[in-house]
Image (cartoon, rainbow, N blue to C red; front, side, top):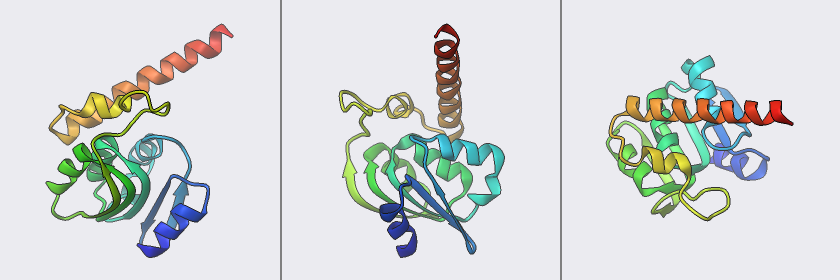
Length: 147
């Protein structure tokens, strides 16, 4: 885990995942990289060790769905912590526990943190994230076609 934390803080990345001897770094914001992994390479998350800069409830649910074994994060939200505590097989370390994850402009809650807050099951959270990302994709496509 120490090696992953060092990479997380020294490389320009937001997420580091190790499975077996393979280490991968990721750079996209939010849960995009986790969703991409779950869709395209889900076995890489199985029993993986993860270091992430910020983990809210949505990211925590995706990590649980992926079957990770260990997590380190600089910032962990209380809703994510509550969800992760239910998974006794995941060892969790964090630097700072916060009430919730903020949006990028620091003016409100992270939209996914807010949407997932009342969801109980991993599948409900996963569907909420999928719906949100699809809506974002459509909005971005609409912006690109009107320019």
